[in-house]
Length: 401
Image (cartoon, rainbow, N blue to C red; front, side):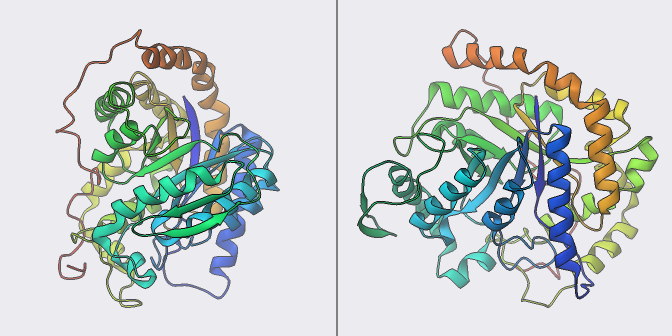
């Protein structure tokens, strides 16, 4: 099992003059530390206009800075929004980052989260999947050595040679965002790594791993001529401390992350409230104070606790054959000091056991991909709640309809 860290660059109100400056530099310090400690991946999201929840509209800039402060950690776009970017510009930025990082880029692609993000770019919410698929078909040939033209429904470009060229050939590993659990199976069918941005139990992980690998081995249907990337990653709450009690005390921001995700995701098109109209941290505090039992259950459900507690939870995930667990602890108002201490303690006392078993996992994967191991088709219908323990947290009179 491999381990990643994940950044939305959250910054709840109230905002001070230098809040964003401090946030970005703290995050870079954390990525540099993670690289030294032996973590495998650092993932950075792209979002636009999502106040408090994500202040990360330019992941290529952040990851470019990280590339100069790290040596080994893989630098993941988790994800680039293909719906709000020009495909040639996507390839140019990914390839440049791959050169600067000496070939450490992971290329995650997504559609965008909501009308709040899509409308300013003139993109209709109902068209986003169709646009994403067309953009993949346009982008992949641009990594090659020949000029490319494209004439599609949503995008056209005359013949041009897109430069520079990525160091990794034929292209950096491809991933797709799976913000809805059903899209994990779609990721397998498309032959891309699945970035599961939701919080699931170890039982659910077993079901979705089987669905993903059965999809990629039995129902492969690629959108273009690219190299497949059989990998499945899931995000988990994360805070490691000497005791379970101390870890939970330090992990308040994790429930803010999930509260904000659902608060902004209740409407069909996930349209956010009007700009500047809601203090999301205040809404979270009111909800948290009124629902301490729900908060407690949520923290117990993630990788929050002492090294021994987290180790035991990961052993259950390990039996599901998850390829990567992405650890989320830059969230809400979690402190920089506690995040760094958590990364250090986990790397010292937990991570080595699971890194040591990576060879066995890769052998399992090889046998699955070759057909030597046949996975049972498991029922995933009981495992489709993307909000985990925080169901129905957002007040219906505040979230946009």
